[in-house]
Image 1: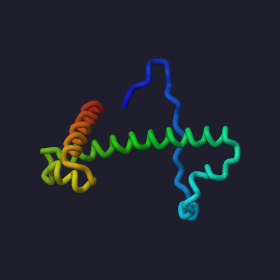
Image 2 (image 1 turned 135 degrees about the horizontal axis):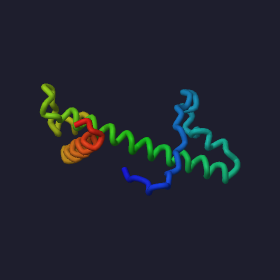
Image 3 (image 1 turned 30 degrees about the vertical axis):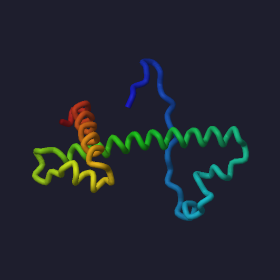
Image 4 (image 1 turned 90 degrees about the vertical axis):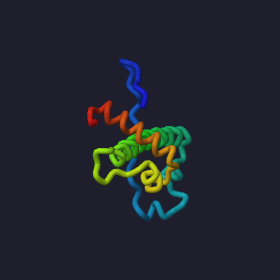
Length: 113
């Protein structure tokens, strides 16, 4: 992830709230966006959701990488190979190797390695 320049804060994404099951069952329903009549408000809320989903994706990928690195740690008695991790996560083996390295870098950066 990239750092914002000093003194400049990135806009905070909107919170992602889980929708009720009945709303999810309606294929036209998406975080009440379909019910918004004002295009300005729609653009604002849709942009907030886009930022929130991007932030959530970035964070989830970091957690995937940390988990992959932990699972591949040679100090673990139940260590998994990159192939095993790839199969479990639905990745290619090459991508699993990259994620393991990314996760190791994150762990070193956070002082967990």
